[in-house]
Length: 222
Image (cartoon, rainbow, N blue to C red; front, top):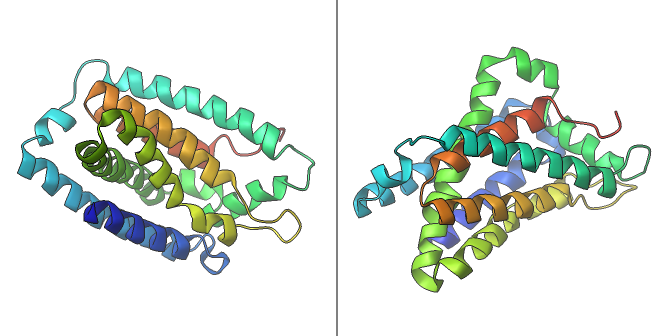
């Protein structure tokens, strides 16, 4: 469980740094998240290689892209619906959404930047290697698969706790949106990874979800 604790500490620290108002739309936002997840994904890949599961988990198979796209589309629709309820257009709570996207930066700048697009995809892929490739496996070894996948989602969501305060709004209060998204997406991706026994579908799903959340589907009612 030491590697699970290490993952939680490192990711929480990186998220806490990246989601401070002082680094909104700044290179430090991307550098901190990328550095943390690249380091942890290296640890995850080493674990898979050492245990002989690397090829089994990461070998592409027919249907991986289709499954990933279907999962991503379902999550995008669900996130859109949740935002309409939790932070509807015109409400004071819509400020939570503004805070998130101000932190990420201008969507047009992201679409025009090959580097930022690549970083979004790399971070998403690394998150899956870390949380579903390593943490989920470690938890399954300790408590069994049935308990491991929801527990992995809870730990994943817990790593996003700093965003509630870093993205808080003076009027609307602490921002729960990324915590909710982390828990909901984490449950879907952890269950899919546990059920399918491989990572490529959830990696594709996370990449698609992250990209379109960042640059396309921003403001409910907008």
